Image (cartoon, rainbow, N blue to C red; front, side, top):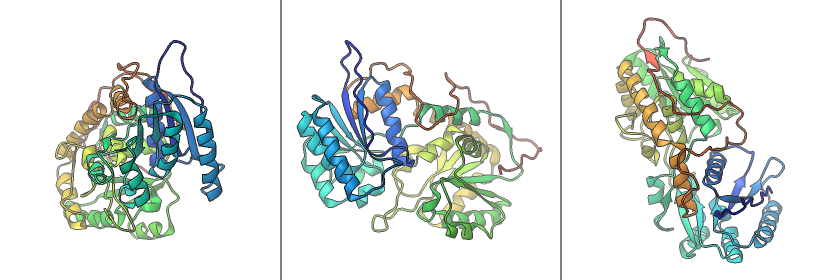
Length: 407
């Protein structure tokens, strides 16, 4: 279990926040979300003590869980006053409930992301609904609606770490000619390719090729890719698969694609699946790429319908193929939509605004500084950071020159 001490500045009264997280250093969307929240809490002036259930040296066992509960409660009891206990996963809510009584804490936000909205245990949901200190926080208006039985949820959309945001903006601002063959990109954890709708996307792209001509489909994400995924894409010469690309390579994939498609299937019964928000949609737009979002779920909060992206009428391959054909039919218009996407996403992910939102939602306090705070780079990212606002020139100009697809 990782612990960090409160580090108060002399003469400064700052919110004292305990952050309970499921992991550190293991990767995944939840961990990135919580790391970004921690960075913005610090940027807003909060003093933080973090407790991680798992790390690279620990796996999830009954003994690990019991040790975490006992050590965390013992440590929190010695802290004295705590203003907020942020629960990074609903499974940690019982620990927070006990810790709040030990420290007389008055704010205990509990984070919900997607599948846990429908698949969370009934006992945990009852605990949050009945305890006056606990309140749900989630990532989109759609997921807030799924939590009505738990309570009135506050919305805290995922933020983009500043270093990663700058990489995407910089890559997307590079002028490039239109490639000879249009590219559709999709990014997700490769192990959940079925839930992310890859079979339907492959079918839709195949149908679109019969109407608009050659189209390249590029799949990327954290791997390794399962054998069944390799078997799915092997027969198609127009599909590329990129396993665990680094930040630079992933940013280039975003910036060189004509459009990005996330096709998550929504299931509110076992096996659960659904898209609570879809942070990859925002990443694609920062790089200047127009997007297609899932037909269901909370992703419509992540783009502007008809301006920076489109949504199929339903989850069928036919509806998806119709949207792909409409967008690919006019690549100049599609490139213009990508430029609008970059402009909108840059404003929507402004770091100072996100710091204010994080502080208000999780601590009820005003951040110490609200005009462009310096956000620490997210742990694990080593790429160079740029500063200031970026001008976004046209990322693609129509030309007869061929630009080969990314390999």
